[in-house]
Image (cartoon, rainbow, N blue to C red; front, side, top):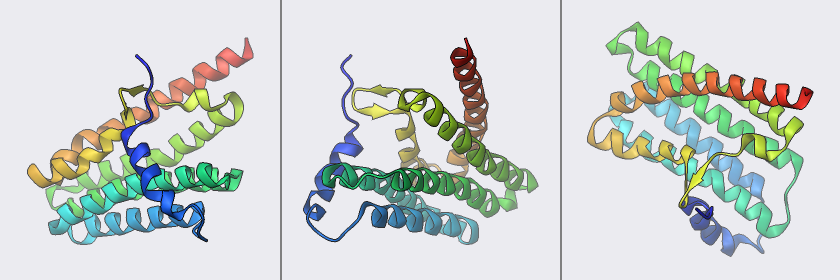
Length: 199
């Protein structure tokens, strides 16, 4: 199957085109992503009854995370700092997302808070390993599979529909466990790439 550019990246490209010849810098959009993600995490933590709105904010954060890269490529304003800043902001947002939801669901028991911290704090390790893999082995080492315009990471957009129609609890459990599993998978990938490079 021919790899297609993901739909959200194509839409992001379209939306940032008007900013091509303006003072708006890709790093400005990365900061917007950070603010949206943190607003969502805080709302989940202190106002779980507004989870529907927090989920929408997080979807916007995920989408805006593509806009900075598209603007950078469009304007030639790519940089190592911008790339790392984007990477780190994504990691921070994922970390605080799970921690925030876990805290917000504390009435279900201490296990929810613990799971939230386990899933959230998996992200700094995932981020570190992926940055090492990319630095040592190139972008192929951290490339996500893409199928017909969708990437595996696009499943995070389901935070909205699942929260709106079933409740944040039903997003939190599988995604939090999945994030811990992703850390284990990333550790294995890192080990495999290191082993491959040493032979």
